[in-house]
Length: 249
Image (cartoon, rainbow, N blue to C red; front, top):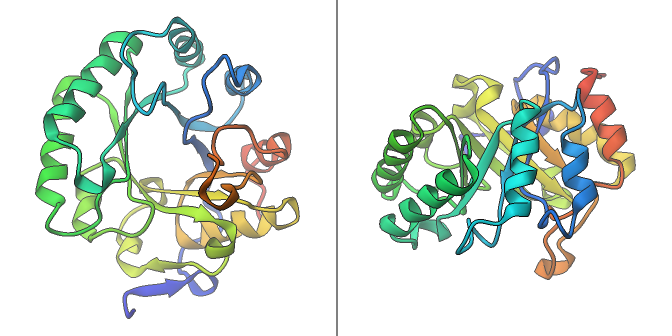
């Protein structure tokens, strides 16, 4: 495709300062260490997603409220998880869930997961984002495409997730040339199955491709049977150290 640039030849600078966007750990009762670790001072977090039960759930959860409050008190932005199901979810359902997140957990914004990527879906996504911004007053909106969308989406949200998938795909991935028109702060990469020995290579690809918000983990999706984001990477301390100090080649 003519508008793509390989990871090895991307024009982005390698001095990009990286930080983490956490796609959402398991429930705080299941993953208490993970949620506790996120509140540790000095961790370079851009935001953390709170996904209670594939959304806000049906009633306020005191454990999730406590976890979200602890992060917000530590100055960490907490985002609610809204599943767009590639455009299949009704506008009213999404807004109802967003209001629950705001009422119950006082979130700072939203990750619109499984966001459509095509041009025809853009007006409806823009309508949803405009409504969410009105509810938030001020807030942070991330579109979770998982790949490169039609360029017009970049004008709709604060950030786009332009890669979400396995290391086996990421290491050979390509970046759309239109992304060079925007700063790295606009783009996020989520990569699972990254071996410890390839961590620096993965960080280098993110910098080359111009994405400043990342989440890399050695957990895998086990062929689609498990959630690779549900628990902390085995090398969390190492990647926090590398990213937090701005380590580069």
